[in-house]
Image 1 (cartoon, rainbow, N blue to C red):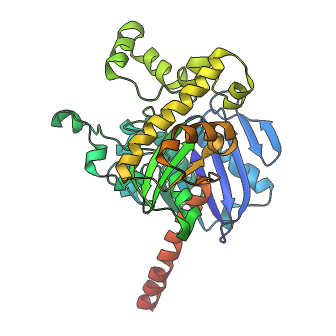
Image 2 (image 1 turned 180 degrees about the vertical axis):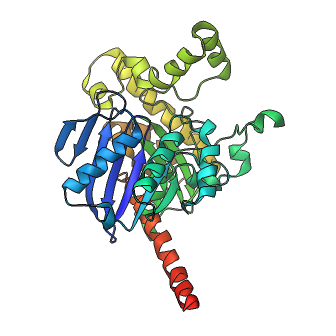
Image 3 (image 1 turned 30 degrees about the vertical axis):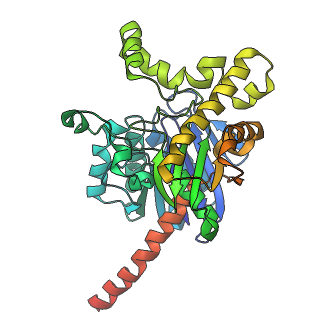
Length: 365
């Protein structure tokens, strides 16, 4: 079996896949460092999990109680948020790769350290287990330089300030979902608490709405989306750097406009603030969509994924209404499955290694 590990800023999720890529079991520890909760199937329980290493241990212990031990695993695949400009493909984890992931910590300070902790913790428990990394930024490595470059002086750009894009594993899974029926010019929306879009031309990302960080682009659950840099500087003057970070990332977006980041709640409310927040979300999704359509030279189809994209029909309808002047184009709803994409990429790498191992064995006999 393949163990998929997704270490977030305050949670760690795992899913087990059989080698035919069917899901066998999933588990998670949430609210790490606080009132941590372990979820395994339909069972939820409080646990002591002061950090991600302990949380992963709790998850693995829970799996063992279900009769699944580490010795049953063929490999582990990890979601790593930021791979920078070097790590643009799924890859086997070596010390060199680990060092490269660590070098990207300034680009994803809330995620890459926890990704590394999960990798190292699993290596400590099972040193011979083959581990692989899949990068959330990698799908957008095909963006042309003109799409990724900020118009900054070279010295500033050398700090790593460029558009990277995120939700790449979700978009890669979406492309896999279409297979041979993939539209040539596909506008893809990943709409959830974090929201982005991607211009996908012949299966490749040409542009995406998130930038140097996941803050940029669409209105989101708690993130502001695109905002003038001078407005950010004004916020820093008024509130300081740390509080401005909190405002932009955790107190803005739908929450800032209407008091909650729960789209289902907003759609059920009948007040001006809720209606405006929904309108804002749809309007700016469509505004950014126009930019993406230019990037791929037209539009053949639209696809929605993510929690809101899959479940909120009114949101899909409103966005498509904004885009109706592009003509009648088909729109699709695709279940998000980043974990399966990681398992798929891990299996491909395992299969690619198998002939090499066989060749090495024959050469050594």
